[in-house]
Image 1 (spheres, rainbow, N blue to C red):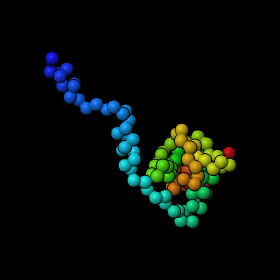
Image 2 (cartoon, helix red, strand yellow; image 1 turned 180 degrees about the vertical axis):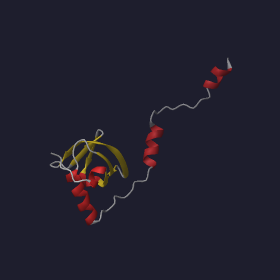
Image 3 (cartoon, rainbow, N blue to C red; image 1 turned 90 degrees about the vertical axis):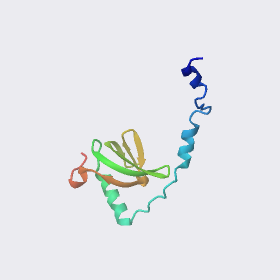
Image 4 (cartoon, rainbow, N blue to C red; image 1 turned 135 degrees about the vertical axis):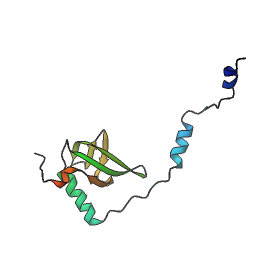
Length: 111
């Protein structure tokens, strides 16, 4: 038997595809959700009302026990459903902990 073929029989075998990845996800320790101070919650509300489709922003939000950050172009701000849509992600307003962008330094209306 050639050495390369012989070595294959001693390679590790993963009978359960994706099992190791699932274990790594379970090992992550969930972060507690930050309680926002009232003045910062009001500022976030003002920022959410000022942004428009097409604006470039960076949003920090709580998702699956972790805080995530995404930078991208806003595709929709749904004030009725209270959802921000950007880069294919829907972020409920209640999960947003920070919102940054150049738009907040200017006074521009969406119309």
